[in-house]
Length: 142
Image 1 (cartoon, rainbow, N blue to C red):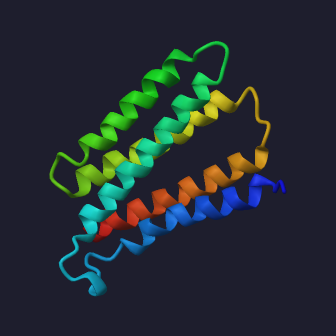
Image 2: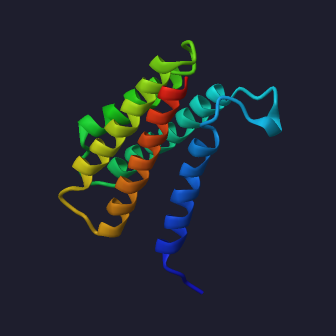
């Protein structure tokens, strides 16, 4: 049985954004010793690295490599990792926010010539906007 990937992709994408909102409060009452800021940053670094790897994979699937996107995928993944090495706070959150915006811009530039699934880019833009809103809220709450 073959199913359309669209509903599953949409569900998984929105579910992937949910932890950003669950980790907004400074502490989580159900997990008292859990540091929500570190959790937020760690989750952000994982998701940003995943998205950078997705960008890498898209470029690898093309006959001609987009050198800028290959370099961007590596630089952005390393920048996400580096945010875990600095003091958790507004600076690390701001860097990750910029990383998510840059990943969307890089994906959009790469795909602009060939948008086979326009619904995906609508979804990608909406979820990135939601994630960026969560980052702005977290920056205010820190």
